[in-house]
Structure formats: C-alpha cells, structure tokens
Image (cartoon, rainbow, N blue to C red; front, side, top):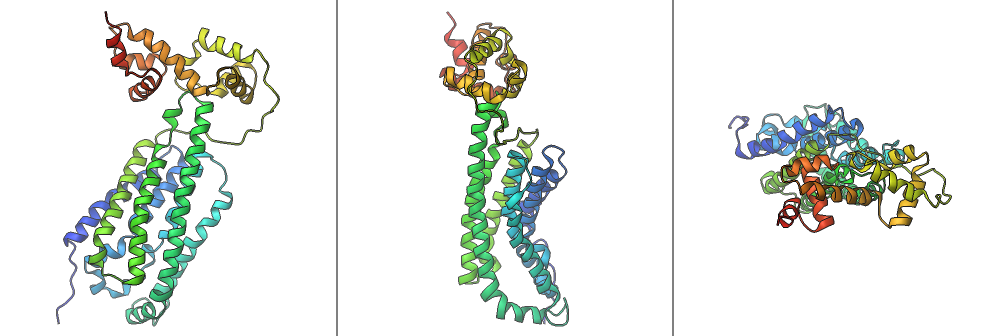
Length: 371
C-alpha cells in the first residue's frame, strides 16, 4: 500500500494559495489600520475568514486529509456565515459610526456554526483522532441535514448584505451631496465594488452550494469556482485597502429645529462664500458654514435649497469651476495647480467635476479659449 505524502507543490494548491495569500495580507493590513478602526477591522476580519474558509480545498489538494484524516471538521475552516454580517458592520461603522443595534444579531448564525464545528471536530468517537467516527457522522447527519441548512442561511445572509450595502451607500451619497463640498472624495465607492463582488461571489457560492447538496462533487470539479471566488475576494481586499485611508463624516438623523430659515440667510451665505472665497477651502462642509454664520446646518441647507434649488456640494463646485475657468486662461499654470488652487483635493476629482459642469475637460476648455 502506498504511503500518503503531502504534495504542497500540487498546481491546484499553489494556485489557490497564490490568490488566498494576498487576500489574507490585505485583511491583516486593514486589521492594523489606524483610520476608521472599527470599519477597517470588520472588513479585514471578513477577508481573512473568507480566505481561510477555502482551507479544506487547499489542504485537500495538498494531500493533508490522506496523511491526517482527523483534520475533518477542523473548526478554523468553517466560519463563513460571519462574512456577510462583517461586511454589514463595516458599512455601518464607516457610514453611521453608531452602536450595532439589531445588526449584532446577524452574528448568531456564524457563532452557532463555529460552535457546531468545534463539537463535530472534538466529540464523535474516541476524540479528535477518530476520523472513522467523524466520517460516519458526516454521512449520517452532516451531509443530508447540516450542509443544506448552512447553504440556505449563507445565501440569505449574502442577499441581505447586498441589499444593505446598496441602500446605505445611496443614503450616504445623498447625505454627502447636501453637507460637504468634498462629496466625491468621501464616496465609499468600494461599497459598490463590494456589492458587485458579492453578486459575482454569490452566484458562484449558490452554484457551489447547490451542486454540493445535489451532486456532492469532488474537490477537483469545484476547483475552478473556488479559484474565481478567491480572485474576487482578493480584488475586493486590494480595492478597499487602497481607498480606505481617511476618516469619513458620519450620517446621523438631524435633531435640529425645523422652523423656516430667515429670508435673507441664503443671500448672506452666498455673499460670504463669494467675497470670503470660502469655496476654495478643500474640505468645506455645511457645518463649517453654519458655525461661521452663527446658525445651524438645517437652516443653511434649507435656505440654499430654497433659493438656488441646488445641493450644497453642487453650489460649491459650481463656484470652484467658475474660478478654475478664470485660472485656466493663465497658460503658465498647470491643470494640477489650477485644481489645487480651486479647492479640489485631486486632479482626478477636478477633471470629473469640471467636465460634468462645463461639458469639457479642463484641457479642452483651455484649448477652446485660445485665440
């Protein structure tokens, strides 16, 4: 009889490790990030758990189960029901920064799953090394009952996470549009990418889980789906680690007065914005304006909306673009210099906003104004 050996250089194992390793590294980077600590930790932990959930396939291709069959039900690999709730907590901490509330209950299925696999790993037969008892338990109870239940709960949590992220980002973008001049800089665009990644991963996950319940395919048959799923997670981790680099304003329900704003408030604000050149301040917010005017944010927002019909972000960016147009007539200034002088935080944001409001890029505008 041939002695089982580890085949760590098996091409399938190597490919999955090459995709899982950067996912784990991104997760660790987010765990130790000092910006938006709660949101970063939730996302980082979710990425690490997702990568480790591929452990059975990785060590299976490496031949570890042939050498150490008692690794069946090893609990470190079976906590994937925590991924959806962690993504929800990430979005909640980033956008609202409040206590978890009802969202904490979403961790119950993942907690129960973890306890179940600990028991399945330790209890059957004569202890953790009695793999025959574990295999018998798997055939009798785990495969026909537990796996379908896990699949159903996992799919439900995944769909809920997709809807939640979509809803929260939309609400946050509306909030940014009304309260800050740097709305584009604070756009958590990776939440959209998370949603897209979840849709792709969800389709793969549903296919794999249903296939597993119906046909119970081998590791080799599932391998292409697992690699695709890991690649999506890797892209997600890199995207989030790249963009999550600054504190984000928090969306909170307004508790201020709802009485009508003074009739002349909008005129006074526009006068200060123009004469004081407040619009050139890169991070100018509606709170800054309210403090300087000796009023509250609700009054400022309603007054400007009533008089101009535009959001705070649109008003400020309109003033910035008008200023930038005058600066672009000076051929000695680069586009980057004009962008910074006009109150934008990056050339990319400046180009997008300028084109939206004028129909041209800054370079096209400068060229069109030449005699």
